Length: 402
Ligand code: HEC
Ligand SMILES: [Cu+2]
Figure 1 (cartoon, rainbow, N blue to C red):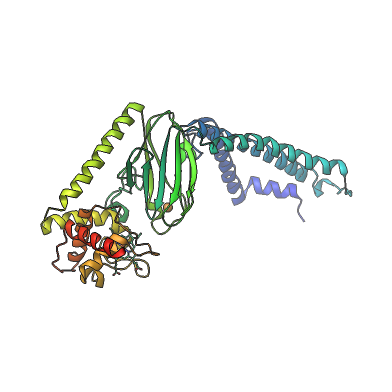
Figure 2: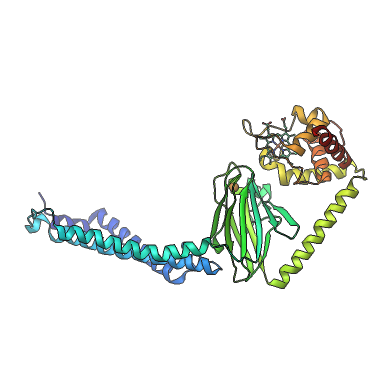
């Protein structure tokens, strides 16, 4: 039998084990190096972000405090353990002590952890309570998640809109080079003022989502039929990005969050502009009822709407995903009765992922996307659907419901 000293010598002085040890040593150094770097820079991509709010700073400090406490405990526990293993080894003639039940030690190892836990619970509870306190907010925004987009509604302002992924399907499929904000860009970002306490009311239209912006330290589940609360007060203007943090279905990774935090004045200007744009859009929707668009116009608008709103499920080529999303190419609905087709898009199919688009798209957009589906991918029905057709369909079904 060889002694451990001899084994150690052999391991460390020659053979492949020596190289392994060298690698391990380097890894440990890198690990320690990166962690101390993390601790001091606070800006590392490996560590949690400090964020741009008072709360996110508190959460970060809490995280670092607990991290250091864990490091200290690990150092002490492993230090004692390895020291004992090494110095009281058999080859040195160590003989195991035979004792049990030491009241002193048992009290110590109960009391010390309790003190450590309480020391950690006090700052943690303080931060948690501050995070939950949504009182005295300056504005309220309702956030509604659905597969796979966010809807923002500003209370008392008549401003509301959907926010959808803006990354092109070409980038997702790898045909085009991926952009700088791949899967973290949207068509309509949430715009908020800095230095104002913003209360968020969060809910969902279908499954559980989670609205998460790391820079604000806000991560809240949105639950159908239930309203959660969160708040933030942003210190610095800027563009902040986040994602849905709940596995909410196939395109879970395709519902990013982008927040533009602006100076007060710029925010007010944006709000006024947005209100005006919404009023104009309503007027445009009304005047669209009198218009007859050509096949080319409808197909062009329809394709754009389809790519932005439908292709995530029914696929760009209209073939769907068997078992999950039906094909539109050659579908009986898209080549059959026009009203039945309009009905699916206006009212959705309850209980399925096919949601009602009546409040999400204008009548013109619905008309265009129906026309597109009826004429793309070899669905050559030749049918034109105008905004007025969608409108009269809505009127009829409204009467029928009474
Ligand atoms: C979140 C996924 C999803 C999105 C987005 C979506 N659909 Fe659907 N769609 C479905 C599902 C699921 C069904 C099947 C519903 C059922 O089981 O009856 C469906 C069914 C349909 C049908 C009926 C097809 C058939 O043959 O039964 C049409 C037409 C349709 N969708 C059009 C659209 C249009 C137009 C859009 C975009 C404005 C759209 N869908 C967006 C999931 C989606
Ligand atoms: Cu989600």
